[in-house]
Image (cartoon, rainbow, N blue to C red; front, side, top):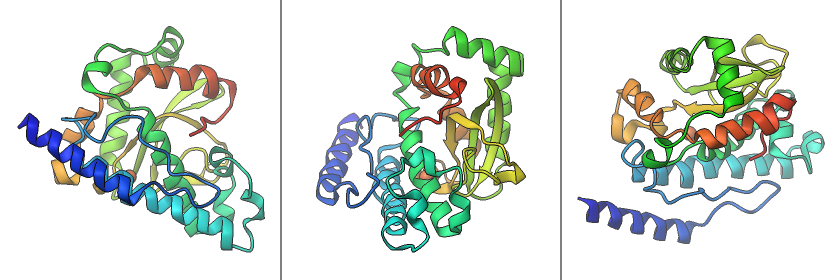
Length: 243
Ligand SMILES: [Fe+2]
């Protein structure tokens, strides 16, 4: 079984090497910071390959098309992906969906790690203090986040996000994220430090319609070192996390 999984890993990486990441434009399709099989068994190798090489690649390709071809795109030319999120809704749904998809996925890969690594990690003292203040406990935060993730109707994301140093759990539809002004009727911007993709493409090959099982497995692969770093170095200082 282990050998078969390793073989699948080698095969998908070979295909990825042929396909290559999207690099043609202002924004790059970032390499995964680990192999496609690194998140097994929480997220399977095939899902990671399809997710990274087709869905994520498409978002990056399309936001580069917006930069190159949209006559109203001057506001986003030469701007980092985390910076253009704020006002991207003014460029219309195609720009919003693809700028969001490129940012959300580039971010998502970085806050995950292997089951064995994650089991050795916990939030930093500063992040834990903020969690306790906002939710009462780590378990209460997890419960709130999981409920938000399970409650997304259709495709979207759940987030742990920061506003003025305070933590909130929010969810967004489609590829929207809390950095976008006007999302969920909010004019203020929140800075995400943890996010979970609950589009079916993120879990359906392994979990089919059992989204709750995928959400439970997610808690076993969170990279708390990275989430803590995002809180302390960026979000608590009012800076969006670069991807
Ligand atoms: Fe996705």
